[in-house]
Length: 316
Image (tube, rainbow, N blue to C red; front, side):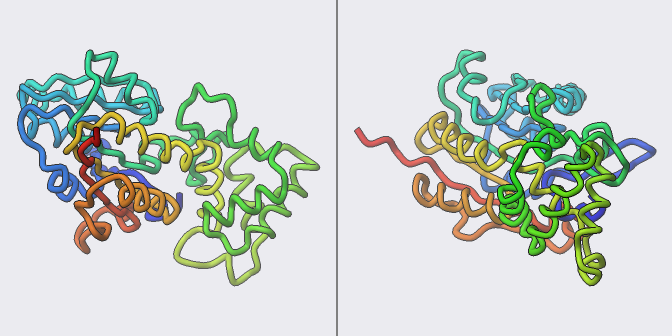
């Protein structure tokens, strides 16, 4: 997105022409997870392995890292990162799986395990997804209106926009994008799609801007940012997947195990907060946010909130 601080996930910088992955709240994540040698850690949203790369030396050769992601393309980057010399020296067993975090029990079973000691969920979208126009997440460059985190999923953003009702569209943009002009935008989208299919990111961005009053077209973020975020979250059922993933993490963790979650949206954070309060002993009474230095260096960390809890002992 034009204002990358509005998007979740970790950032990437450029160093000698190559992307350098910068995981959000890294020091804070390592601190709340209280890692030590021998732990079995599930990184349920491994992405480009920014957090995983730092976790591996902490759990050592007696530990095991299981990484999941529903984006098969981004798993390629994870494998490259975790094949690096620094990670290899740790001798940690590593197993990566093309699965959403709601199915972490399948990844555990595939490695002969039934429970784990730590779970990390880093929600949102990665720079590696945003920066590829053909994935359709961003309007920085025109591309097909796709937005699928899992390329095997059937419904693209273009498909969803073509079939969703105007009221549901308006509600989605308002609830998931916090967009005050959601009704105007939904009305405009429905007017345009009656004449021509909406299939390109630039096309959608232009019609969103056209739907807004003049004063709303100028601000800190691009005027289509909130609408793109809402549609992406709807297409990928991100809130539903989060709820299922939190339950899976609870079920897979051993009593005393820790769950850490980084969220980037108020609705996500609310779901995480209520789930942890109901099912876990809280490590973080309030969410941990990025330091001023991190927020300056990595704009995508500005909206990040980290919460952590300890799985309670099972009652007989």
